[in-house]
Image (cartoon, rainbow, N blue to C red; front, side):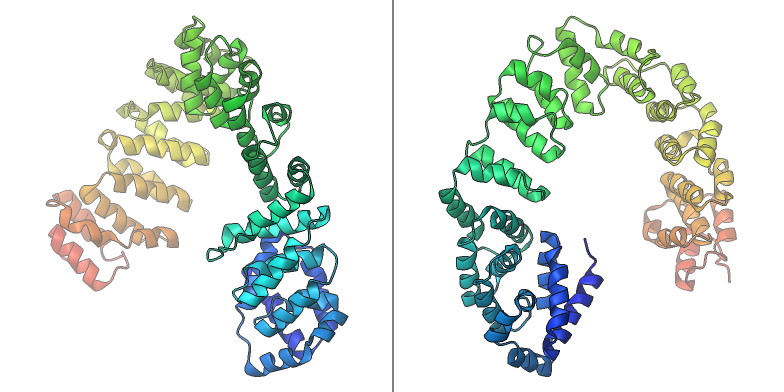
Length: 483
């Protein structure tokens, strides 16, 4: 996808070349436009039409690009159909309507959303006449993008176009052609309409389900199979699907008499919480104990670490959380997924003795482990004191200092004010900017303790705050503001 700056540069080039009558430059732009995806083509059209033309440019374009000259330069006609001058666009549409090829078809499809009624009517009529397979593949993506992103466009040409094409071909043939389109938006649209019109049934969905790469299309197949598919065929397919909603839907829709035992056991450690919930219910229907199975899976040497970690999470979800000693042993595991799960399990159950190790994780752990360790400490501020974070504040990594600020601020009260003042004097611009709202919460705090007053008195002079802010904080805390 091109940036707005790149599209604006091309738009300026179009107007300059159009005013100069430079057919060669416009031909080059037209060749470039032929390779644009539908979404970029629509964006390009919008950027060109929004350009402000000087009166001289408008006069030159209208004078130089007559219908005869546009017909003599087909590529230039493609480009000139986008210019702000409505008279030139109207001439270009009339010329393009007589030109064969997919490039002309795409340009005409663009003009079906034109704000000028005669241009829009002419473009719609020309577009509806182009239903050859190549035209169908070229026009549909443009109409879909317009239908999706042009908020003020209420033209029903999208539906009419496929109705006309459907009269020319069998519905099944037309939608099959569009389902083979390389454009992802077109394929999704074609699959949805095929299901809606009954030309794609559960047998077709079952045949394509596992090999489908687009998860949105696969989910459409999955919904059709859940509604109309044969249970003995549908259940094994959906429990192996990419979409978590399909896997959960299959477990919710079918009971143990239809589901495959090994599939349900595998889904006990699925990445989705909802899938794991339904898998435990169905596993119990097989006469198995989910907790005992989770224990077996957690201790399995053949399962990947990520799956074993989900087995530990499953124990908590089943109402039998691991013992704190087991959680602490997991934190020392060699596999990062197990350490991450241990930190998630520790939230709300840490003790004071865990604080040094958690602070160390924030400093030396991976980014994910540092974030999770921060969550553990933030959930239980009673376990630690701001002084425990001094090493974090002194760390050269700004990300570590930001976590120290988040943690100390989470304590609330005057600890949050102290954290903001420390951040205001930090060398990291992002941290300084985040802490500049320090005075916003001052009125809700109670009286500052002597320790807080001493700390605030030390930090205020180097905070870099405006004098009015420093004075407000000093008055609220009961200290003398620094110079």
